[in-house]
Every structure is written in C-alpha cells, then in structure tokens.
Length: 276
Image (tube, rainbow, N blue to C red; front, side):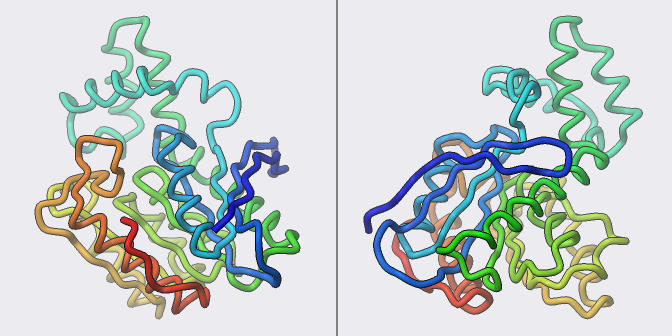
C-alpha cells in the first residue's frame, strides 16, 4: 500500500509537540487511527516503522514525540544507554521512589547527573500526568482529520510508552482501545475513569513490570473494566523491539497478532498480517 508520511505540530495544553503521521495515500472514507507511543528512546526509526506497519494495514497512525524540546537533547541514545547501565546496578524500586532516585542521581559523577535527572523527570508521576494530557491532544487532533473516524481511535505504547498508553486511557473517555507493552500500571485511583478496552503484553523475564500486573487486573475487575493480558515465557523487557538485544521473535510475532485481533474487535480494523 502506498503511504503518505509527514511530521506535524500538535498543540498541547502547555506546548506544541512534533508528531509523525503515516497514513494510506489511497482509498476513501474514514479509517480507524492508532497512537503509537515511544519508548524512552523517543520517536526513533523503530517507532516510525511500527506506525508504518499500521498504516500499511489501513490505519492512520500517529507517533508523537513527547520529548520534543530541550529534554530530547539530553535524552540521546548514548545518554540513555549510560542511564540504563547505571540503573542496572541500582535498587530495583529506584524509579518508583523519588527520594531514592534523587539520592542515586547525586551519587553519580557530576557530568552524568543531568542525564539521570532528565530520565527521572520524564518517568516521574507529575511529568507522566502532563504527557497524558499531551497524548489526549493528539487524539483530539486525529479526530479533526478527514481521513479518521473519530469514534475509532486506540493507542499502543512500549515500555515508557506502555505506561503512557495506560495513562491516556485514564484521561480520554473517548479512547476505544489501549495496548500496554511492558509498561508500568496507571495510578490505581484512576482506573475507574478508563472506558477503553485494555490489552497488556508482558515478558516473564521482566519481573519489575510483570509482577505488578495482577494488581492492575484486580483493579480493572473491581471497576468493571475490560482488561486482558498475556505473559510470554522467556521474554525479557522490550521483547517486541527488533532493533534491541532483547528482541524475542516468537513472542513479538504472537503479540502483533494479538494486537491486530484486539484492534479488529475494538476499532473495526483489519485483523491479519504476517509482519511481526
């Protein structure tokens, strides 16, 4: 399928952000749309490739860059690599405890502290609440496009983006579907506000994330919400990303099939593709 690609500026509550759009160039009528939410690496080629996969199937796909601006200049792939290396030697609950995180950042060499502080900023609850509103602005923008059916919009996110896909569902009552790939749970007190159907996909070798999923499942059940999830044996964090060392081909292919089936049911989109 021939695609049309462009980058647009989306006006958010307190700023504007870059947003990559991929959509079928042929055909007529209004289509379902998917917001593809990036990992901590930003809207890199992998995320744009996922957006194109959706567009090749007939969706309008939007991949916003939540790190538009100064924060993106700090969170370069090299700097993120350093942060990940530092975190591998840190306490496992570090990112969930702001005071522990601040102390850890201060313990690092001075030239590295801004990197860790930026990492801590974008993963903090306050920042993620703001990012959720930015994402809601993206769904509102999509609803204005002539190619989009405003009643058929979903989201999918990976790692950081998985958490943000869940948070988007808590602030956009018109979102129809949300997919969480190995992302942190949304605040439990916000679960009753979710109206979208939610699908979670996790790796068994990612205990820091996967061990928290039963709590989300319980909260969703108690609130009467739709939540299904699957844990892949032997899969690590970021198992879907075919540009990273943790890529797990069998799990990624099955997850892609589940996502398409989920969106076929919830958004009325196509349900089959042999592309992982």
